[in-house]
Amino acid sequence: MSMRNSCKRGLIVLLALTLVKTQVLGLQTAFADQLPDIGDISGAIMTPAEEKRLGQAFMRSVRSSTKIIDDPLLTDYLSDLGKQLARHAQATGFSIDLFLIDDPTINAFAGPAGHIGVFTGLVMTTETESELAAVVSHEISHVTQNHLRRTWQAASELSVPQAAILLGAVILGAAVGTDAGIAAATLGQAGLLQQQLNFSRANEQEADRVGISLLAEAGYDPRAMPSFFQRLGRASRTQSSTLPEYLRTHPVTTNRISDSLNRADEFPYRQRTDDVRFHLLRAALRERGQNDPKQAVLLFRRTLEDGRYRNETAERYGYVLALMRSKRLTDARRELNKLRSTSPGLKELVIVDARLHEQAGEPEQAITTLRRALLIHPQNAALTQTLAEILLRSEKAEEAYLLLKSGMSAPLTGIWRYALLARAASASGRPAEGHEYLAEYEYALGRLAPAVLQLEIALREHDLDFYDSSRLEARLRDIKSELNDLKSRPDSIP
Image (cartoon, rainbow, N blue to C red; front, side, top):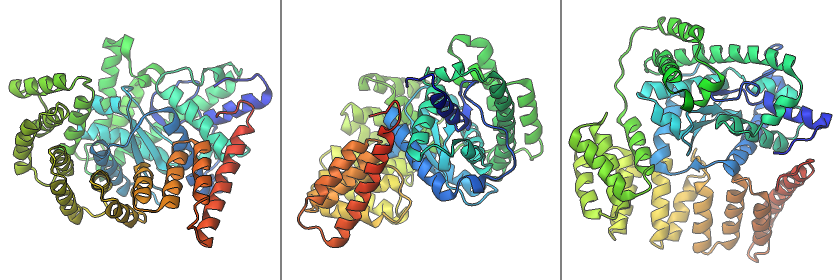
């Protein structure tokens, strides 16, 4: 983003920077800052409704500038992990939404309204489920301790869309080690930045301490946090050319490791067996990382033959995914049947089973499999998404529409629902609704102009009643107002 030398632009960037210090891993030192706390007045600074609006705008900014993974095979476990940890947090009035970013950077960050981004590189770097839970619990602690809400006063003169775009640009630029926010370092605020840095370190220590307590309460190994720190520290001494972003800007100091170890020692030793779903996620990411499906098949076959794996179920699961991508459906079915005989209830295996049936020309069997699973896990986002997709491809648009609409009041996260509802509504003879959901899909991606266009098309449909017309017109006014607000910025972003 281009930067002007005017006082106004300098202040805007500085305010954006004060909003971003909730990352565990990877903010540039000059950007990982917050204003000193002057008392816990966070509730007065930003209401829950204001924070929710900022969080939604923040996610639109994130989606427009990075690749968020919406595949239910990859996101379901991570979502469940976040919910499990959040249930044990000693705080109320907050929500947690974990999302997966397709990027090899070893990083994670917390944004407004409890939106927590986890990079695939971090998932692949953690060696145990407790290590991944340690990072997530640290980020949840940033949320529960109001580390971000306390900074709202500094940005009170910014509109929500402007603050969210600047926040997204700086936090992601710093997270992946780019120059997205480098110009802020030229503002000449060295003294203020040092004060902010000192406070941000205090925030990190508080998030460490609270996060370790959260780990213990949720049944994970509280020593996983200092263990992960130590392992990253060893990496800094042996891999200086490819350090994680965290180690470039926030070295794992002896004091931080010592403090986290002391905190962990307050809890009894607990040895926890990894949930197999943690290893399923890692295996799926490994398979996905192979551009050539034949090479993926070879990779997993060799590791299975040599016994070089952490979890055999997960390794065979990765092998099934590779066989499916290589169109070796008979081999994939044989391997999957072995897995389902020993672990029939795993949702990941149910979804792969359904997808394999569909690829083999058996869509009815796929639909039956998913319907049964939804009786056990009602309103599960991953199962719902997969079933809706297969129903649409099987020309069962009405059933897909009813399925998706039945979950509108449930916490089904992800913009996939809008995309599928747009298709289902249009294919089942509801064109106005189709354009409305497509507008919401474009809006969630941060594409406001296409969202306006879709709402205008919806309003031209002849079968709208007064209520629907009024609702669509109100939504159109809101998005147009936001679009005009963004265009009023000196360096307007299209």
